[in-house]
Amino acid sequence: MERFPHVPREAVIKEDLLRGGVAFDESALSDNEHGDVKPKSYFIFSFDHGTLPELGAAALRRPPEEIVLTGGPYDLRRTVVSVRVNPASPYRVAAAEDGVLGLYLDGKRVSDVGLPPMPDYYRHTLDNGKSVMEVAPTIQWGYLVYLTVFRVCQYFGAKEECQYCDINHNWRQHKAAGRPYTGVKDVEEVLEALAIIDRHDTTRTTTAYTLTGGAITSHIQGRDEADFYGRYAKAIEERFPGRWIGKVVAQALPKADVQRFHDYGVQIYHPNYEVWDRRLFELYCPGKERYVGRDEWHRRILDSADVFGARNVIPNFVAGVEMAAPHGFTTVDEAIASTTEGLRFFMSHGITPRFTTWCPEPTTPLGRTNPDGAPLEYHIRLLDAYRSTMEEYGLSSPPGYGPAGPGRAVFSVSSFMDSLAPDSTAGARP
Image (cartoon, rainbow, N blue to C red; front, top):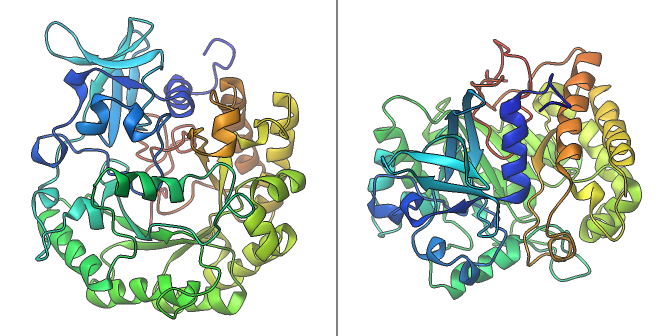
């Protein structure tokens, strides 16, 4: 905070929690789906620093989906943070003698902690007994309905899986633990879950939905990737026209396929480019390099702006893997220079990427060799570079992410929205 006083202090603490995780006293755990706290849904990846058997009590009584930090010695403005469990973290959420939860760093109180209340729609089940949390969980303090309709990825094995991604392991560990974890979600189940959310979300907190899942390199249920994910969007938009901002996370597909997404009613397209550096993309995303290739991936992202408009194409990258051993950059200067080159490439075309702070999950190759992730300095300097590059190209915060600015942002898996200036257009419909 002293070295980077122009970066919101809330973002500094948030990035440290996201990159290194947080431990929970039993007093801070949820009662799963039967209590008053919204539990962690494991909506696509584990986002944990240990496997379920290694998490102890947190594997039986789930931690909260997110926490909100306020006050404390740093007088923090309201900061929403996605929960990434790490029993060895120096950060711990625990109750004081008066029962009030706080965030502690090496035993010293950093802030007060609020937990997400159990939403009414989580207290209802589908006709087949499945929970809304399993079919249509919500994140970002209820802003986003996250529809992982395909829970595994067809990039499979060491020669194809992205080296930082644990989607396939997360599927395996939940099945091994006997938890419900539907592999391919039925369209009608999704619609039924959304109907429950729509009926009980009387304050209209849920504002957007994301359709996503693993990459499809051949077919699922006889459909290619655009048709598989697109049919959910088509069904949602026909059933609930205009109720939510529709977003899809998929591979960078040919323009004709991207047009199908748009025709189905999708409003925002996320063709994630993962990491900018050519060598690291080839090494860390071998399946994407083999099936599409980095240059073609980038061409397709630019082409998709012709369909959706540049503002509504928002590719993600995984912030921090640039510094992952054994092949990553060894200095923060090099890593920031490379990542900024990628930001300038896309932003010069009017496309605003966003990023997820890398969580080194231990079942992934990069997680095993880099258990501490990237240094905090990298993450803080990235926030600075991101905002500066946006200002250079006259861009504002991307649509579909809620409000921007410290104390206002709800995007929970990185601090990019917390670090931007408040923007009256943030979160607006595209």
